[in-house]
Length: 263
Image (cartoon, rainbow, N blue to C red; front, side):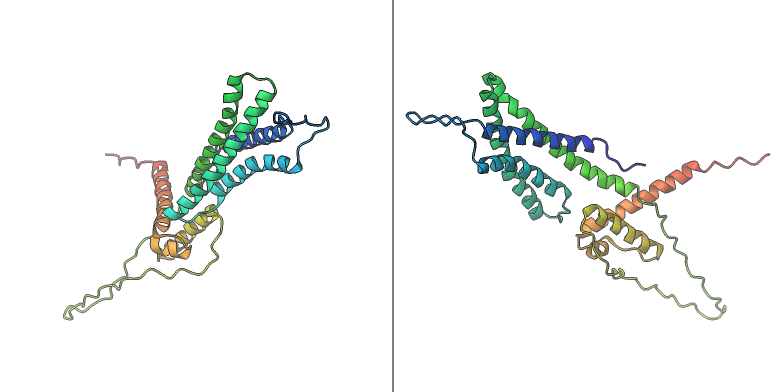
């Protein structure tokens, strides 16, 4: 199965298109000559905007795009404080960029002679496109992680083989020895990938190796090994087990039923 996510390319195209239109409108608006105050001399014929005004016009949409990429691509740790930091940091950047870009594009449309309604609602199309593209990037990013988990090689559950009991004389009583509980094996030190998708794939691989070795890791041990929470480790364990169950179901469905014996 292909891991390519349908619609993610369109999400990036929409983000780039909205950002390009916003940059172009902001730069073009910086070249609109301001109206001098009443009683002030008119602007010179060769008037041009200050370089800082042009650079500032480019900054707002670029800052918004960078903030969205940081939000979508960085492997943020789990926790309410980290979520507050992620979205609390994006909110002021997105709000300021949207307001500034709206005013610039609306003023540019009015300068070009568009009617009041067009100058008022026209910029909303660009802002709406950026909001939809941002949401699509976040949504398809989560779907990519889910598909990567289902594409992992299925590992059947290790069979537990009971050791054979030695022959005991009839006259001798057989002592009952309780098997000692095996604690969670200490996780082997390994470099933790910085990318969230690579970290999840490495965790699933580590769990499959522990199952093959006969000492499956618990969710807490797997989370500690990759510097994440116990819930994060349990999610990776459940992904591997779900993939193994699906593989077993497919093998059962592909096995032909035995024919009844002839009478």
